[in-house]
Structures are given as structure tokens and as C-alpha cells.
Image 1: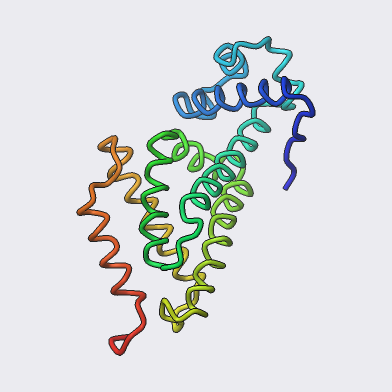
Image 2 (image 1 turned 60 degrees about the vertical axis):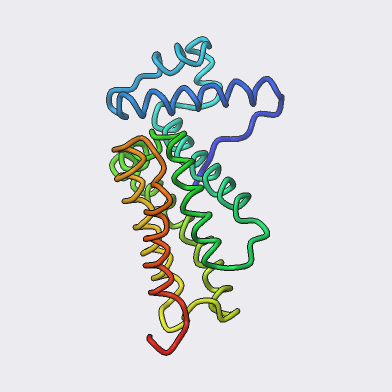
Length: 201
């Protein structure tokens, strides 16, 4: 999948960042169809011609925004779980980190969902890329005997991603908050019951 080239100068990187931040706001508030390059550059505080230095058109900026949000989300979660050895603690921290990220980037949901219509390849890339890293971590946990290995790591990854996405809807988008501790505890009891190795498989 093609992506835009990273600017070489600090000023260029700052301008590109300002455009993507503005695009996140505009696409999140107005939808892809309702958004305009003029509104993006107005919020970014740059001339309209500057937009085309970094992106050939509105769709290219939209696609690049999905890629940026995906990268930032994966980086944020990776940093949060770094050094944690227990897989169930990884899941807990990963869930909470995801919810906190969405709380700061609520437009993520609308933008990703719209991408399935604006650019289906990007929509599939987003979730497949998230799943790939998830699967690797789960496979390691299976190899270490921390979670059951009679269910494929890929199946487990997509199930857990589905839980996080819908709970993000329920709590972050609807109630404007991260799920309370007791809800996280319930989710983790469910996950541990399903995945912990033992005679009760």
C-alpha cells in the first residue's frame, strides 16, 4: 500500500503533522464527504496550496490519516505493555490503553468505519495490521503455556479486538470515559476463563 513520503525538514514534518491533526478533526466532525481541503487548511493554519505539497488530494490525506492513527495506536500500546511478562496483565493493560487512546482520539472510530467505503483496502489493512501484532504476542503466550493452544491465536486476536472495539463504543463514545475498574475486571474474568489452560477446556 502506498504511503506519503516523510518530509525531510523539521518544518516540513511539523506542517504535515498540523495538516493531519486538522484532518482528524475535520473528518471526525464532518465525515469524509462533508470535509473539504479548505476547512482542513483553515484549521491547520496554512495556505491551501501547502496541502498539495504533502497530499495530492483529500482521499490521500484520509488514507494517510488512517495509517498514522494505526501506527500511533500500535506504538502507544506497545510502549504500555513493554516489559510485562504475564499475558493476562498484557491484555488488561492493552485494553485500558486502547480505551484511553480512543478517549483522546474519538474521531478514530468514525474515520476507520468510513474508510471501508472511502478506501476498502485501507480499512482491511488497518485491522489486519492490528491483528498481526496481536497474533504474534498470543502465539508467544501459547508457546510459553500461559494461554490455551487448542484455539488459533488468530481467532483469539480477532475476538479480543471485537471486544475492545465494542466496549470502546459503549463506554468511551457513549459515556465519554474509560470503562470503570469493575467492568475491566469483568472483561478480564471472561478472558481468563476462556483462555487460561486447565482441565476445564
